[in-house]
Length: 397
Image 1 (spheres, rainbow, N blue to C red):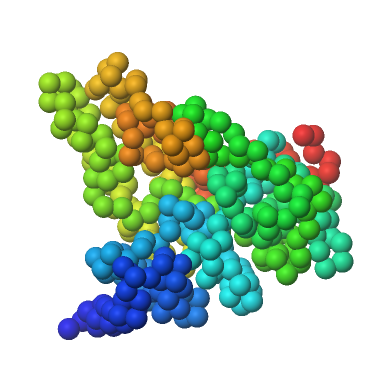
Image 2 (image 1 turned 180 degrees about the vertical axis):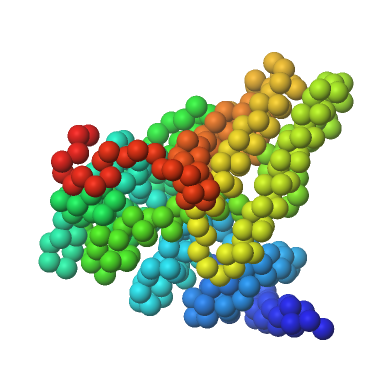
């Protein structure tokens, strides 16, 4: 028996112990998730005491599969994707022991939903240009500003927030990173209606919002560094998460292909096969990246995964629309049923085509992803940046 077999056996016993004490059929989801977290089976690759066991990251699908086979509730990725995919790894990397104990457990159980207050009307692709200010007032920070494209802000209890704390330093150096209570006075959330008819994004206005200094992540002025940890994990959660072969958009498009044999042509078949190969290569690249990162933090190479994800999804949905012709332009109006939830792959071809357009914008535009790959992965010369070392207060905005 290999060491890995022994670890799997130990994990199976731990899962069985949780299931024996908390029957999924008779236990509410929150109670079950609390028990799973306390047993170290939330994120098995996190440290002990924080929902994990310090195990290999690639053992997570094995544990998830054991719980799924027993009919246990899932990991709340649909409900709290930003919390799980972005806030949690950032808190783990930069949070104090007190912050980890306070936030990771209710985040995992989805007792607290998280959103991401990063982008602003004047700071999207150039995130370091954020103008939202945080001014120190005793043991608190007073925050004023506006954020935009904030997913699930209308449901969120907490937010990860980047704000400017020093206007006399360059735009990258004058930022700090905070945890913001979204339920307090001064936080106003307004929905943004998108081309598909839904309002999954929001704009958020912050007026004299108070954040205790104990809810700062990392050192003052270290916000850009902390934010990059969030962004790298965001790109993994978008473009490199573990998925089965021929799932997601690819699975939906291949189903459409099989259901419409009368529309097949040799040229379309060749294009679909090429897209299938591209999708499988991207899926395997994501698997290799997660194995290499193991329990650590991903780096700039995640931008390549996110870039591929957007390109392949848009090509696949364009292919599907071309295959179906005018029939592909119709889709069911879900806005009255689920007006604030998005399902990339589970609806009609017309919906998938429209929603995929956002894949090259959300989580960092494809143009920015290409810059990151060229400069930080391939080592090519950087773009000229005239504003790099100028104090933020002196920049023309």
